[in-house]
Length: 76
Image (tube, rainbow, N blue to C red; front, top):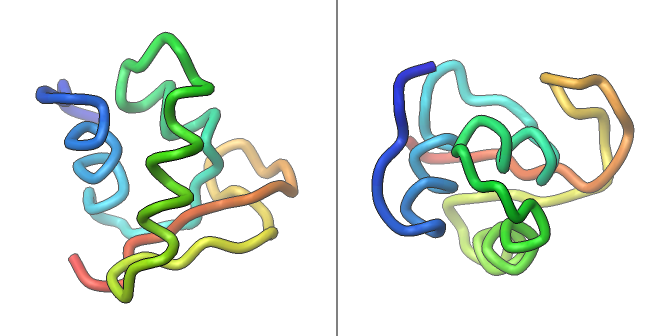
């Protein structure tokens, strides 16, 4: 994955919008976005999950394969 720039919310959106679109947990999003404080990702993904462009649910992460809350971009 290429380097992600910007504020934490911008980094999270960039990671989630990068093809292939997939279900990602907050830990994997934080790692891919190079956000060291992974706890900072949760309020961002929770807010995105309330929009029509993203979905958030308990399921399997397509990256680490753990079952937890995951977020996916529905409209790139």
